[in-house]
Image 1: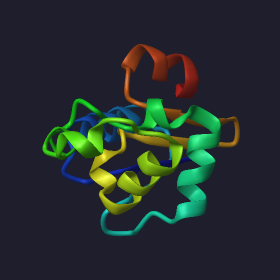
Image 2: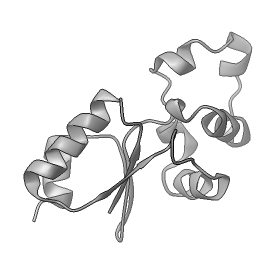
Image 3: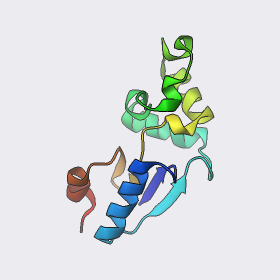
Image 4: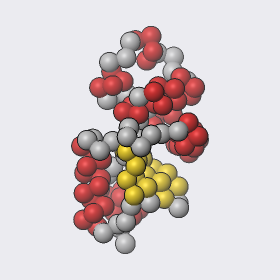
Length: 114
């Protein structure tokens, strides 16, 4: 299991704490420090859709000029997320079963608890 996120994100901290408490083994990949390549992001978009990945509620997105926020499509959303990984909803988790995004203790209990 690989957990993708940003180390100082509160939701990522909660998710990592939950995984540690449950004894679930994972590798953490910080998309800011460790990078995010276009092919990996495209695989997430293919699996989940860019609308689900793009965090429109975050400060980074809200600070964008209105012209950039309007009329988003797959290509423009992907370019934004590659340029500023903080715009990706977090955490993104990749397992042998696929990819999911976001943290919900109840959902994760069903998915990942042994």
